[in-house]
Length: 184
Image (cartoon, rainbow, N blue to C red; front, side, top):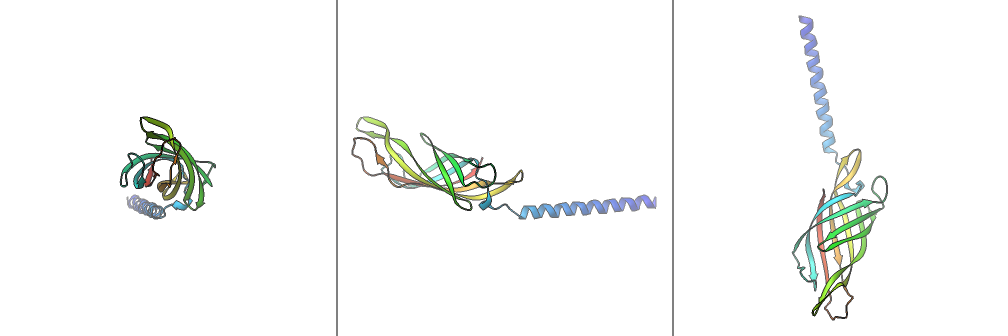
């Protein structure tokens, strides 16, 4: 009987020690967060934005809130890639741009798209050529299956001037926005 109680006490102490060790290692893992600077930028992100500058763009005003989905596709097999393809949804379509990694967690790229421009009684589908620059900063990361992946980003979109592709005379136009987003 005495031996059975002693064995039970040892098992209880070992069990408690194992639980304490597991809890300690779990808390250490919770404290050590993956660095966003080393994160792989990939996946679909729900982006919430606010227009920071707008002039001459129909229906766009400073302070407008916008919601978009941006999809990042890395061009390398593992890790933080030197290039990432970004597909940005817009109100009337989407555009694709290649982002280059400029520093740890920071990507930039430029591209252009066409936007409709109304003039008199006619609307030109490719009325504006809209060149733009995008900058994306990885601000959050998580360890997923042994890999560090981006979970949060901040971004800016800047169109400093639009090029009129119509025979119409229109005032200069531009717009810009800042975004924050999280992995879907």
